[in-house]
Length: 274
Image 1: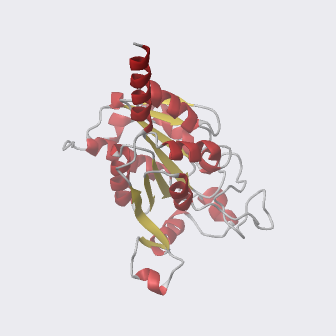
Image 2 (image 1 turned 60 degrees about the vertical axis):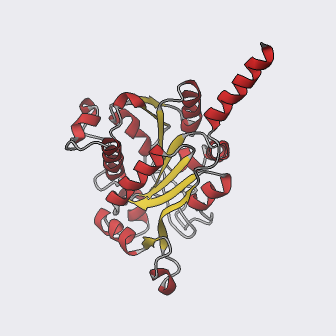
């Protein structure tokens, strides 16, 4: 653990600031929670590799002063898998948005989960494609509006937690940008977990999603996360079962990790050829 004071500037590439996120975007809060988690864990910047694809969320890999790869849309987990297999000692962190994680990147998401490769996937769920103009995504939700759904969206949304659980992720959690300290503590556990970790963080996009769906400005949207979520198993669910649950849903430490299992296969093969 690291007891020294946290200084944001120690972990970012200052030359790329000010950032490109819109005023009120929640992604900066996600970045803050992530960097505080890394600081409190006492991890060296050289121990971390961050891989991202394309989108608002994916700008994070350019802002942080770690080993980083800003790759192609939907393939962030693929690149991270290659990095992890070649350098298994590194902590692999993959921040993704709706598309990178669950649209074009959906196939990679479920297979990384079933393999249980030691990667921390952060799904920054703002329910919209923000960078490209506000198109609806796999997380937008039924009846919501977007630039490509002006008369409301008719596609059901994925439940990130249930999808990750069903695909076999060995660590699955959810938090929000309103609960920034909770998100930080969950990220600490996810990063240190040996296996595929999925952390969904609800984060607002007032520019596109909030404006189109009349959910107010950034402050009002964050108040929505406060009022419409609750901890797993809370008594509040008895009165309002529609509340979104937050916390750690899966923490399985018994499943074999993919890189370690792969190394054992290589050892077995080498003995057979001796």
